[in-house]
Image 1 (cartoon, rainbow, N blue to C red):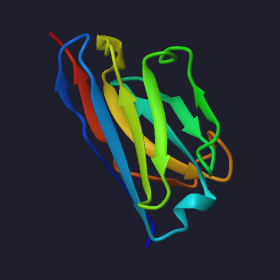
Image 2: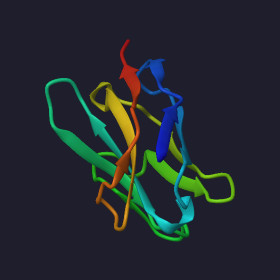
Image 3: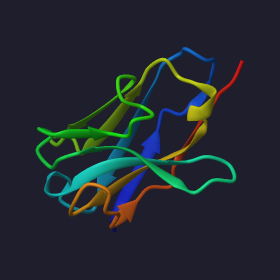
Length: 118
């Protein structure tokens, strides 16, 4: 069974940092491009960041470039998203996804809530 389990979300204040994790199992993690996608209340999904299979190439949405860093540990099947200088508009449920290309979603986790509020 394919599983992607996100963790690390929470309630933080503007300017704070968080690190999200996503643990994969049931598939060959290192054979897939991985991404983070978020969905804010009342809005559609927004692709946030992606990383190639080997972790050598990363991609970011303009809204998070310079603040978020995506990385992966293929030895332990974990995807990370380090988020700095968080803004209230970063509030959303964050999902990790796996696909055959960046932005393609073949598998998705259940999400972790990030709330940025003073």
